[in-house]
Image (cartoon, rainbow, N blue to C red):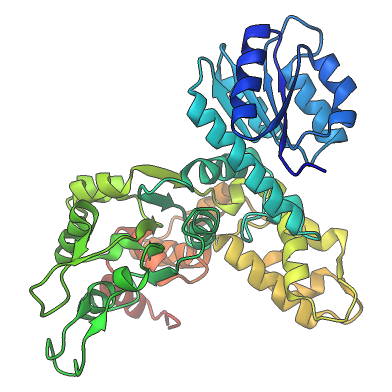
Length: 454
């Protein structure tokens, strides 16, 4: 029995059918074509293709999008690539939402189409290997089926094979590192190291040494040579989280890495060639920081070759039930039945604003599992902040700040408390929202008798 992959071409243009069948036969595929959606559906069970490429607009009753809808219900394991000479945003969005692996326009580049088909096959094989994982969890822990998350998945699929830099933008807790890992694990670099570092968690001197390495004697305590993470990663991936926190001098050195593909260890003189791909992330608006002179514009443009925006959880509430199920599976004790969740408890989860995003939701579910006594998570197992009797909208909460006409000092205190609550006590994020540095935040808190938790 042949192990060659099978591909079905669906197009009402016989020239296109003959061309693509010839191309994919030459590439080692077993190729068959159908000149209508109806013909494709009639023969797909017998042929059992591993991937299907279809035109969208055909002079038949069953067009490409309708065929896609049928296949998602009857043959969900077959990735579908749609082609069209009449591209539009509406059609592209519909194609992605209905589950197309990719959406390309005519006239197409043959080599690019072959690459896309092979990527679809690899993705299909990887998904098949994960027997019990829900479809939405296939990309390295990323969970969601809303249009915003589908767009993230599509961008990951498109950029994973490229060597270019990627910039991931999103609030704290949205899963930026998960996106970076998904790009790495779906790329040709997957067998090489993935090394991440939080640029805001280290002092400038220590961060420089971690990134670029140092030579013996470069500073007190440097008793031997040390390779930085750009060297350690080899041909893998370096993930720079919170890259906006880099000092201006380190920004210059990172720019050199991107431009020259080399580093100079601290205290050294000899450049070292590096080959790792760089993926950066920030929870701050880098374009605004560039306009304010707080971040180098040339570095921003080097990092921002491909930008992926991760939406906050409050903008994709429809994904909360999927995420809850994912975290129940992840944190439930082994050997016990998976806990269920009461309808009232789920409603509270859906109503909450989630300032800490997916990370906060995971913490809430992990806590609920520990408190659960009867195998069903109830409202009593959730933190008190989630089940206020009368949940208020953001507008209502803001109106409360000045409903009794407080003094300016009192209003400042109330707003500080509000921002700290909305950020889940994240001092760094609160300072960013207030447009102040963290020292000023501490001084404000001390002035009003507030104690910031470490």
